[in-house]
Every structure is written in C-alpha cells, then in structure tokens.
Image (cartoon, rainbow, N blue to C red; front, side, top):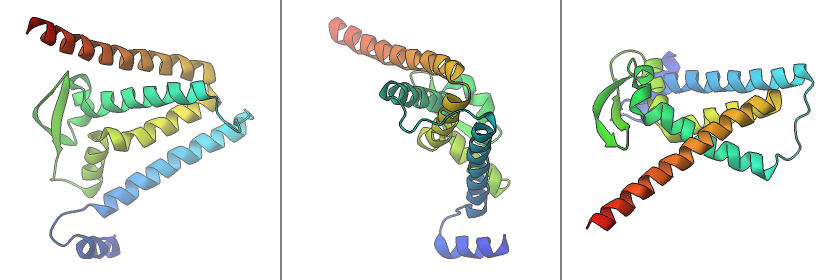
Length: 168
C-alpha cells in the first residue's frame, strides 16, 4: 500500500484521495460479481443471451429506488452513520451527509459509496441482475415492490406540485 500512497500523493497532491480504499472497494465488487457468476454456473441456470426489455425496465427503476433508499433516505441513515456525518435535510425524506475524513481509507471509500446513489447503482444493478438469473421469481417480486415505490414517489411529488399550484 506504500506504493499506492505515493501514487495517490502524485495523483492528487492538494486533496486526500483514498485510492487504497477504492482498490478495496473494487476488489469487493469483483468478488461479488465473481460469486454471482460462480453461483450461476454451479446452479446450472441458463444465463439469458438477451434479457427481456420488461426485465431491463423493471430492474432499472428498482435499481434507482434501492440506490436512493440506501444512499439518501433518513430511514437508512443508521447504515451510513459509521461512515458519514449528518449535515442537513435534503427534502422529501432525504438527507445530505458528508463522508467522515477520520479513520481508514477503506472507511472513507465506503462512506463515499454509501452516500452516492450513482455509485451504489452499479452494485445494486449487478446484484439484481444476478438475482434475476439465480432466483428470478423472487427478484422480480422485490424489483416490482421497489418499482411501485419509485412510481409512488414521483406521484407524491407531482401531487405536491399540483397542490401548490392550485393553492396559488
């Protein structure tokens, strides 16, 4: 890791970038993807050559919702608390948090991952896609619930906007 620390210093001399933490996160992602691939191979389940469009849409919306749920919603703040610090509400049951600087580079990179719905989406979509191969009925059921929640979120916001406009 000493070499990586020198690379990080040359890469970003004026800002702390926990490259060694990112390497650990990439390794964990690779391990997750590899475990899913191995489980699919061992299960003998066929891997679709081309996923159905309906599954892609379902998993896309479910990925969006689960990523935001983990990264932003107040109810999941206990998951993020060891790695982040609360800043302020962000509206619509969401929070703004900052990544803790103290501690290890791995802790910092986990904090960045847990507060970034865009970053989490890669992990969530990989897990859901693996689930679609390994346990398709359960994965579709869970994804349907997440998709319905995402649709409800948009309807709640549309209702709030319409109500404000109607009230003047």
